[in-house]
Image 1 (spheres, rainbow, N blue to C red):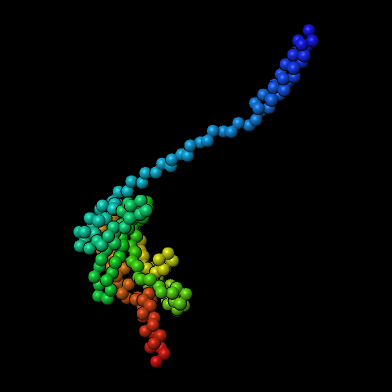
Image 2 (image 1 turned 120 degrees about the vertical axis):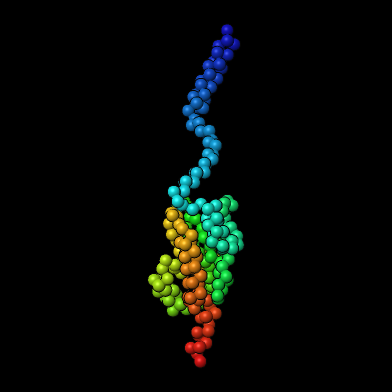
Length: 199
């Protein structure tokens, strides 16, 4: 009889410990399942507007106009978005670029004018004259690219109903500005002016 009483007490004690433990475990916050990272869907490019140039029709127009395409311009994914040309000119070998904007709504015309040896040493007068010249050479304008440490010129038109004559006019403008204003962007011209002034 005594043994049964002892065992009953032991079982009751064990049950008294186990039940709160189960309750405590049940009340613990459950760790939510890890969500798999969602793959970002690449948004489709908007369809070009009626009469807008595509990469293919841009190349065709440049070929028809007789321009020598040096190389394709590509984005990080390897997609062609424009072309670099080789234009023979009186003073310099010109290498203008014609490119579509990311959304295809604009055409950009750019031309590098060479690296700046030491940006901090560019005469203040030169920089002020560049800003002043932007009014005279509009729609072309002088710019400075910090990434490549160079002066360049740029212009832009809406990519809508662009005719071959419009294309040639914009490219010719880049060549004209690069040659006619080389005293502003060419460091060799700054040195020659300094020398002349010191004589």
